[in-house]
Length: 315
Image (cartoon, rainbow, N blue to C red; front, side):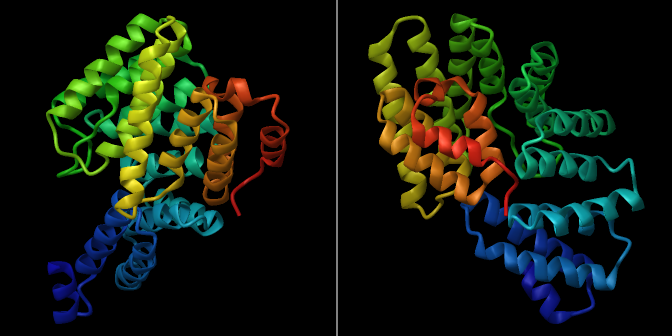
């Protein structure tokens, strides 16, 4: 890797250490290779030793530490970034994500994403995450507005991060519509996302397809098309299995695999998958399982009730 060569040639090159840390963190996120986050932290800390007022280095370090489950350290790094520049869109969004996945504080996370999007209106990823948070707090008007903006930016290939394409914008719109009982409109949005995904090559394709087919299957159930449900849920589980075979087993996609099993009536596997996802990302997994309709049929199951009572923050 060129960044590795750069720091070998010049150990005092702060920008190279920063970019190397970001590269390790990005690869860890996309390929679910958690060991790369340790390397990312080392590189980012070295960048900060050389340039302690780097907003980007502090916000990237905070994001990596949140991803590692080290929330105290992660939030402190993000606060340092925001002290240096309270208007930095990346730091605002990073705080939103920390609250979203680290504490499952969907309402507060939405506010931070909204501020980030105001600071950078071309950041499709911020709009995408804002729409997801809004769906989880059932703020439908806010969510649909954000999803609409995300769709525009997805089609324009504007994520807010150079070289990164966002996917999932129409899926977010479909999720919002499904939660309102607008199943036919939800299906139309989901199919629009399928069409978009079929035309792009994206590292998170199988993760998105797992969620997309779960939500599409659930929408077909709501209009009485149970035959299509099974085929779609099988596709969701196949997408999860493919990620696992590639070595990318992470709690976010495993959560959707749990939802697929729940919708198929396989309570044992669904709860086992949820428990494993919660072991890696407790608050985020449990709070969503508590409110999302895919798990409604399991809520009388004592095993799920026990898991939901556990609640709490990530270790």
